[in-house]
Image (cartoon, rainbow, N blue to C red; front, side, top):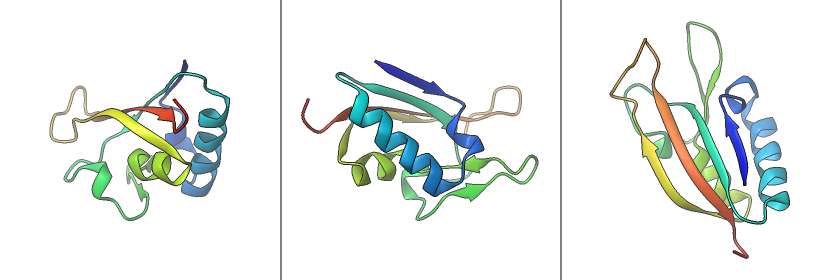
Length: 99
């Protein structure tokens, strides 16, 4: 199991996708991801990564990144419409295609 929480938000889309591809290739079971949720629409609808204005961190579409890396999404949760301490969360649990 590879757990990656709050890390990919600091990487540009291409770099985050490359790291996710590496995680999927090294995982024998699952990759659990969490990052920033887009505040107004589900991250899975994003055609490209967005930038959060207040700190310039990235809001990614992990679903698309997983599929592009040859993995599959097992479960997901978008909580963009619910804020806790000014934060929103987006979770994706993914597996390599071979599992």
